[in-house]
Amino acid sequence: MGGSSLGDNAGSVLSDNQHRALESVETVISVDVWWTAATRWCDIVLPAASTLEQDDISSGGTYSNDKVYAMKKVIEPVGESLPDYEIFEGLADKLGLWMQFTDGEDKMYHIKLAYEKSSAAKHTPFEEFWEKGYARQEVPEEARKWTRHSEFFNDPEGSPLHTASGKIEMFCEDFAKLGIDDMPGMPMWMEKHEYLGNAKEGQLHVVSPHPWFRLHSQMDQSENLRALYKVQGREPVRINTKDAADRGIEDGDLVELYNDRGTVIAGAVVSDDIMPGVVSIYEGAWPSLDSKGRCNSGLVNFLTSTQPSSGLAQATTANTVLCSMRKCEDPEGPNMAYEKPAIIEDMEIAEIDEDKLGLDRLYELTEKLYADMSPGEKIYFERCTVCHAPREVTHFTQQQWKGITPSMFPRAGLDEQEAELVMDYLMTNAADAAK
Image (tube, rainbow, N blue to C red):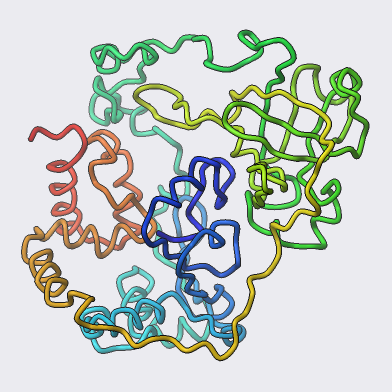
């Protein structure tokens, strides 16, 4: 479990439920560049190098993805941090799988291998690409004039959409057949589980927009940025003037926002620019718990609900939340969310007991895993899951995969035969495939 992937609408941070869930897990391992909110709850943290501390490769451009970029190392890794590749190379070595993981080569070999699968390699040798820093990929002229669903517009019968009917659907018969109470076949307004329309007296509607001074939780650790907008070191919460006056709250006070899921302490920003009955607090703050279980930093995830958007979609409902609010009379000292970990010098690490690793079983499972893979499955997990698709094929339906693969296959550099093998694997194992 990577530390930087924990969290939902707040991005890389923990909710109260997640915090409790982690306590029930025997071992949690994080690979991260920063001492993030999530790494604080991990048992093992492997410090990773940033993109400026390692060589890598990437693609870019518009919809046509017409460039390949050489991401060159700017500085050496700081401290004992290592690039992700070297971290997993070391783990593979400990498990006796170094050759299988590396093919006996270094990372640059794999970067070159990835480049040579791109169309740019047909006209620009790797050495020239790496020296120049980028190379162009051939893109058909029609791709530069791409318009979404243009094929369907020009030929509705010959180029149907990836819906059951092949058309734009205002009513979806497949959804209606499922008989899910909160997912009718026709889009319609349905009463939310929490909103001002069913609020108890004194409750407020919480919205949690993206932050102005950071990207989700990224850069919340920046002291210079926090100085621009935090209130007494906590996440600011915008409150209507009347709502604040009714509760004896003044601009700059610390307040508690609470419901039956949790409590957060935030800094009041009293304003007429927000409607009465609504408070706004940015998503993405790093949490810090006090002795009462309150988030002393202002992470809105402690308030948000796990209620899905519907029984089918399962999307978040982060902006459909109610809470109560009061002035905080007993804050427990400053926000400690950004304190660095204690460094233990001269620590002796016990030798690995290989008998407890069960390596023989690991070798057997690995061998069996590869032996049981179909050609399409092997290509999918080797080439398509790095950044193009979810790891678990059953997370998407056949129609969804058909919508994803037109962009996934070119990005993964699959030729026509490889794409056909992968598509067969996806269609056979999609969520709605006949078993």
